[in-house]
Length: 218
Image (cartoon, rainbow, N blue to C red):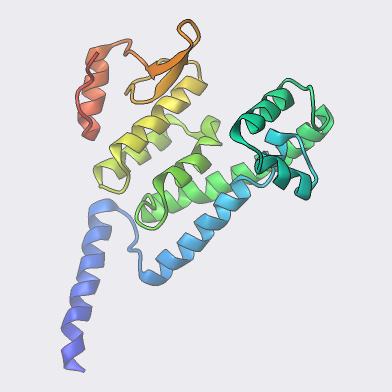
């Protein structure tokens, strides 16, 4: 019995140290496994009605067939759906968006709570999957929430690049210039995708340095 006490004590000390440094509760294996399942379920719910909306199809079999077509055909279909040429009616779209919006809001509330309580779940689910769920609620991603995420970067729980991408994506959604300038944007003049040029290179480099990104180079 005494042989097992020391490793167990060291484990508890390790958990306590992490919690003290980050302000998060320690993540045991049981908690991690539970959170992983919950986040995977969130990912499924995040796409609950989006496929139907993108392809303009409610029938599961027909939807599966559309999704199995060549990429060009899929893109044409989605473009025509967006332009209202094919697919479901406006009333059906509005109804599906109402359902999906309720799911998205519930996901965000729960996910933001998990991040604040246990830290960004980088170690047991892909960052981009978590980012996708968050970005589908970009209006709810306030400056205060980005401060929470920035703290996760500094704590090593979230990569600087993923944080910068989320930050600039939300700014773009709000018709504001990017700060970190790490993602490509579509240029309507040249008809090409390219990294945005900083409005204020000094501010961009200062922000990049704070989270550990390299200096912007024009």
